[in-house]
Image (spheres, rainbow, N blue to C red):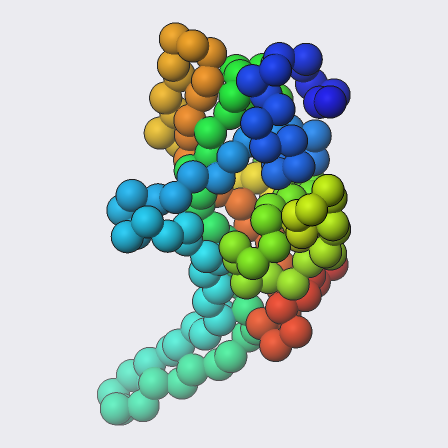
Length: 155
Ligand SMILES: [Zn+2]
Protein backbone atom coordinates (compact mmCIF):
# COMPACT_ATOMS: atom_id res chain seq x y z
CA UNK A 1 0.00 0.00 0.00
CA UNK A 2 2.85 2.37 0.77
CA UNK A 3 5.33 3.50 -1.87
CA UNK A 4 8.08 3.47 0.74
CA UNK A 5 8.00 -0.09 2.06
CA UNK A 6 5.80 -3.17 2.30
CA UNK A 7 5.99 -3.66 6.06
CA UNK A 8 2.57 -4.66 7.43
CA UNK A 9 3.36 -2.47 10.41
CA UNK A 10 3.56 0.66 8.27
CA UNK A 11 -0.11 0.30 7.28
CA UNK A 12 -1.56 1.08 10.72
CA UNK A 13 -2.82 4.48 9.56
CA UNK A 14 -2.35 4.33 5.80
CA UNK A 15 -4.26 7.55 5.03
CA UNK A 16 -2.58 9.81 7.58
CA UNK A 17 0.83 11.22 6.78
CA UNK A 18 3.04 13.65 4.90
CA UNK A 19 3.07 12.99 1.16
CA UNK A 20 3.72 9.23 0.91
CA UNK A 21 5.06 8.81 4.47
CA UNK A 22 2.61 7.20 6.89
CA UNK A 23 2.38 7.71 10.64
CA UNK A 24 -0.10 8.09 13.46
CA UNK A 25 -0.46 11.38 15.34
CA UNK A 26 -0.41 10.68 19.07
CA UNK A 27 -2.16 12.57 21.80
CA UNK A 28 0.23 14.77 23.71
CA UNK A 29 0.57 13.77 27.36
CA UNK A 30 1.69 17.30 28.25
CA UNK A 31 -1.55 18.92 27.07
CA UNK A 32 -4.26 16.98 28.93
CA UNK A 33 -4.62 14.33 26.28
CA UNK A 34 -5.31 16.75 23.46
CA UNK A 35 -3.46 17.25 20.20
CA UNK A 36 -1.98 20.74 19.87
CA UNK A 37 -3.33 23.02 17.19
CA UNK A 38 -1.45 25.46 14.95
CA UNK A 39 -0.10 28.64 16.50
CA UNK A 40 -0.20 31.83 14.46
CA UNK A 41 1.14 35.23 15.42
CA UNK A 42 0.90 38.62 13.72
CA UNK A 43 4.12 40.42 12.89
CA UNK A 44 3.97 43.66 14.91
CA UNK A 45 7.37 45.34 15.24
CA UNK A 46 7.43 48.23 17.71
CA UNK A 47 9.82 51.15 17.98
CA UNK A 48 10.10 53.37 20.99
CA UNK A 49 10.50 57.09 20.35
CA UNK A 50 13.50 58.22 22.49
CA UNK A 51 12.75 60.71 25.25
CA UNK A 52 8.98 60.17 25.06
CA UNK A 53 6.38 57.74 26.34
CA UNK A 54 5.46 56.88 22.79
CA UNK A 55 5.92 53.47 21.19
CA UNK A 56 5.03 53.12 17.54
CA UNK A 57 3.67 49.75 16.45
CA UNK A 58 2.92 48.60 12.95
CA UNK A 59 0.89 45.59 11.86
CA UNK A 60 2.82 43.84 9.08
CA UNK A 61 0.66 40.79 8.44
CA UNK A 62 0.92 37.29 9.80
CA UNK A 63 3.87 35.00 10.22
CA UNK A 64 3.79 31.30 9.44
CA UNK A 65 1.49 29.01 11.41
CA UNK A 66 3.37 26.25 13.22
CA UNK A 67 2.47 23.04 15.01
CA UNK A 68 4.48 20.31 16.73
CA UNK A 69 2.96 16.84 16.93
CA UNK A 70 4.16 13.54 18.34
CA UNK A 71 4.26 11.01 15.52
CA UNK A 72 4.46 7.22 15.68
CA UNK A 73 5.79 5.22 12.75
CA UNK A 74 5.01 1.54 12.36
CA UNK A 75 8.46 0.87 10.93
CA UNK A 76 11.73 2.74 10.66
CA UNK A 77 11.58 2.95 6.85
CA UNK A 78 8.67 5.38 7.18
CA UNK A 79 10.60 7.42 9.75
CA UNK A 80 13.70 7.52 7.55
CA UNK A 81 11.52 8.68 4.66
CA UNK A 82 10.22 11.56 6.80
CA UNK A 83 13.78 12.53 7.75
CA UNK A 84 14.59 12.76 4.06
CA UNK A 85 11.79 15.32 3.69
CA UNK A 86 13.18 17.79 6.22
CA UNK A 87 12.85 21.35 4.94
CA UNK A 88 10.66 20.21 2.05
CA UNK A 89 7.10 21.26 1.28
CA UNK A 90 4.41 18.64 0.93
CA UNK A 91 0.83 17.73 1.70
CA UNK A 92 -0.09 16.81 5.24
CA UNK A 93 -3.11 14.50 5.50
CA UNK A 94 -4.89 14.24 8.86
CA UNK A 95 -8.28 13.15 10.20
CA UNK A 96 -10.93 15.80 9.58
CA UNK A 97 -11.66 17.83 12.69
CA UNK A 98 -8.36 17.41 14.51
CA UNK A 99 -6.98 20.83 13.56
CA UNK A 100 -8.27 24.26 12.57
CA UNK A 101 -6.87 24.96 9.10
CA UNK A 102 -9.19 24.60 6.14
CA UNK A 103 -7.90 21.93 3.81
CA UNK A 104 -9.27 19.74 1.06
CA UNK A 105 -11.68 17.14 2.42
CA UNK A 106 -11.26 13.56 1.21
CA UNK A 107 -13.53 10.65 2.08
CA UNK A 108 -11.66 7.35 2.08
CA UNK A 109 -13.57 4.23 3.06
CA UNK A 110 -15.83 5.46 5.86
CA UNK A 111 -13.62 8.21 7.23
CA UNK A 112 -13.12 11.86 6.32
CA UNK A 113 -9.61 13.26 6.01
CA UNK A 114 -8.31 16.74 5.36
CA UNK A 115 -5.35 17.51 3.11
CA UNK A 116 -3.19 20.55 3.89
CA UNK A 117 -1.02 21.44 0.89
CA UNK A 118 2.06 23.70 0.95
CA UNK A 119 3.13 22.42 4.38
CA UNK A 120 6.84 22.49 5.22
CA UNK A 121 8.52 20.05 7.61
CA UNK A 122 10.92 22.21 9.60
CA UNK A 123 12.06 20.05 12.49
CA UNK A 124 12.29 16.58 14.02
CA UNK A 125 13.19 16.08 17.68
CA UNK A 126 12.90 13.75 20.68
CA UNK A 127 13.27 10.65 18.54
CA UNK A 128 12.75 7.28 20.24
CA UNK A 129 13.49 4.11 18.28
CA UNK A 130 12.08 0.83 19.58
CA UNK A 131 13.62 -2.60 19.12
CA UNK A 132 10.41 -3.80 17.42
CA UNK A 133 11.18 -1.35 14.60
CA UNK A 134 8.66 1.34 15.46
CA UNK A 135 9.77 4.93 15.95
CA UNK A 136 8.31 7.95 17.74
CA UNK A 137 9.38 11.55 17.27
CA UNK A 138 8.15 15.09 17.49
CA UNK A 139 7.80 16.84 14.17
CA UNK A 140 7.21 20.53 13.55
CA UNK A 141 5.37 21.73 10.46
CA UNK A 142 4.71 25.23 9.21
CA UNK A 143 2.46 26.77 6.57
CA UNK A 144 1.05 30.11 5.53
CA UNK A 145 -2.68 30.65 6.05
CA UNK A 146 -5.15 33.49 6.03
CA UNK A 147 -6.59 33.57 9.58
CA UNK A 148 -9.95 34.87 8.32
CA UNK A 149 -10.60 32.17 5.72
CA UNK A 150 -8.32 29.55 7.35
CA UNK A 151 -7.19 28.71 3.81
CA UNK A 152 -3.71 28.14 2.46
CA UNK A 153 -1.80 31.18 1.25
CA UNK A 154 0.40 30.25 -1.70
CA UNK A 155 3.48 32.44 -1.98
ZN1 LIG B 1 8.82 -0.54 6.52
